[in-house]
Length: 237
Image (tube, rainbow, N blue to C red; front, side, top):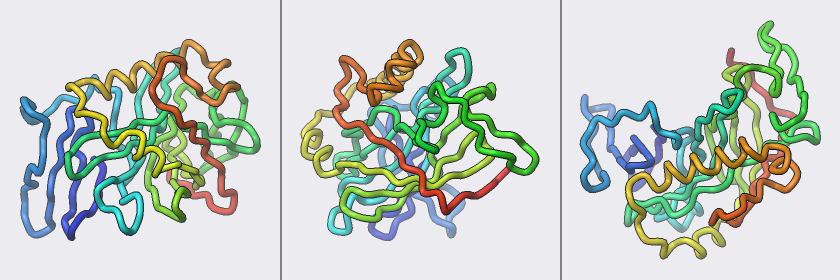
């Protein structure tokens, strides 16, 4: 579930595709459905879904509570288990996704984390975390906050053992301008898009590392790099 607040309501993205939005209150035992795509029957079996939740969602600016931005992830098995971090932009008036980014490249000590580089983060509660050689490469979004007009900070869970704080430059107004008139997509469109991007990276892993994740034939035009903020690091093993 991806939590967010709008007009003093605590809301959750229950599922991104199909899109289901819930309203929950500590005073009430049951959540209420605020929106769900037509034809959706709850509950939803999401075990086969590629596009999954992650961080909270936040308004793109202090003056715009229509568009919310956050981090989600896609789970993909290619020789190893990959969790890719994707930036999602949600229209909370028409209730639709308008943008799903390419996987974010998280940079650690000058190298993208987990992409062809043998990087050891060190011992975390006696667990040696080797991003590339471990069986599972997990980079899940945990939280996001806005620092400036196009600057955000996000915490990323690395293989369920350590949280790292990254700075993200997201050209959010350009993204909204380019995508605000995008029609509502058919059910499964965003899930399949996440799967296609994951498949492409799995097949072109070395190429993708060096070309900034420019995915041929994909509509996403903005590459987002995550820059480590080295003074902050938290173990949660």
